[in-house]
Image (cartoon, rainbow, N blue to C red):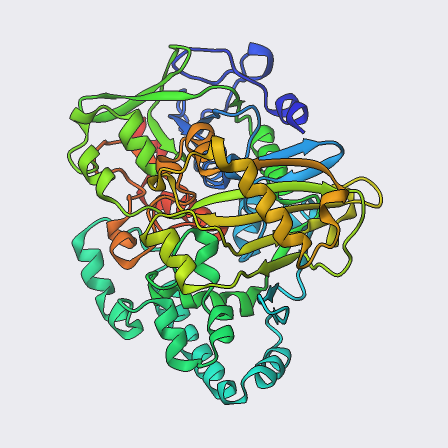
Amino acid sequence: MTNYFKSISGASSGGDAGGAGASNGGSASLPTPTGGGHQAPLALVIGTGFGGLAAAIRLRVKGYRVQMLEKLDAPGGRAYVYKQDGFTFDAGPTIITLPHLIGELFTLCGERMEDHVDLRLMSPFYRIRFDDGSHFDYSNDDEAMLDQIARISPEDVQGFKNLLVASERCFKLGFEELGMVAFESITDVLKAMPNLIKMQAWRSIYSLVAQHIKHPQLRIVMSFHPLLIGGNPYSVTCVYSLIHSLERRWGVHSAMGGTGAIVRELVRLLHDRQVPIRYNAPVTRIRVDNGRACGVELQSGEFIQSDIVVSNADAAWTYRHLIEPQHRKHWTNKRIAKGNYSSGLFVWYFGTNRKYEDVPHHMMVLGPRYKGLLQDIFKNHTLSKDFSLYLYRPTATDPSLAPEGCDSFYALSVVPNLASGTDWAAVGEQYRQAIATALQESVLPDLNQHVVSSRFTTPQDFQDRLWSYQGAGFGLEPVLTQSAWFRPHNRSQDVKDLYLVGASSQPGAGVPSVLMSAKMLEQVVPDVRSFA
């Protein structure tokens, strides 16, 4: 896959101000949409995660020349793809909701997503397996959901219906009315206050669920979603209950070929529109001149001049490491250090030489604790001996991701970020073995004797490889006081002509929010004619 990406995107070797080099160090003659012989302004996009790719497409359609710079050897960022031993492993995001946000990018380019990306609706969306061996299949089938609730706790049937009403209220007030607001001023916050009050946004999602649901297992089922974006259900705002309505409307999908297949097609859209991507090109500095971003410096020492810079890199890392302190009055080192950051992630990727047909595509394998474990992760910053896992088996839907007769998996454990002081080089393998043992004793019998491919990644890798501050998987934790206006803005508060997209900026983490951050960029990036 790496070679394929390189062959269609190229690695520009040009250090010229235009930055429009194409494959093999040649030059691509990009259109000049501003007309009158003027060359279109150049946007440099740092990072090829979903946010960066979507931003590049939208900027290109707006008439910018665009060049992308990627630290790694292939695109995707957190959505990187590993291939080894005949197995394909999606490194990060695997759950696709709001597929129309991806579809919009193809529509902007005059194409149909369905002609290039094969999304399959999951049924169930997730299976939640409790420590006692029982399970709950979560879906948008109301009848099936109510039947399962009635078997576990008949008194919670009406409570679930009431929870859906509250979720729908948050969906309308939080998603439909506020979801695409680029919060840039206190005035924007004041305008949103009536909606926030109606949603009681200061409450946690767990407290909202607990108001309506009494059974402890059902409370977990209805409140676990923030864990998938690095947040603690006991502190993340209840606005995120809108996910229930969002998933009921549009479902949960997975891509044939894995999430990497979506990345591949977005890269193709860019290639077809003469947008070069330079791989193995880490940006080490955003150069600021007279208060505005005027280009970037690469680790090689090369400087590339531009009209605007868009960072899809981690926001805290961008401010802390790419912009010199004298240019940062808002996102100072002190403010960055004082933030509460999302959890870290330990992910074990493994392939087996047998199939586990009883394991669905998405499965939560819960440990013995819920609140106590979350307290250790988010408050105590302690790596516990017990854990809960998100087990991803894409070969349940797409056997092509593994050799014939085999299965491809990853097991994700939410862990403390690097504030815990965990020496992952010393304990990583031991932690992986503990996960393997837990899976072998629960849902994957005889696992250890069937593993034929294995690798894992830790919060230390997130910091070292992805340049994620504190090794956090999703930037600042999505509590109310670190959301909306309080989260890094899409238009930099410190540097003119610098813009941010991705999980660590507004509106937040998760594939839909990341794609929305790129769409919100259109509200704040100047029209190309302003550069003429």
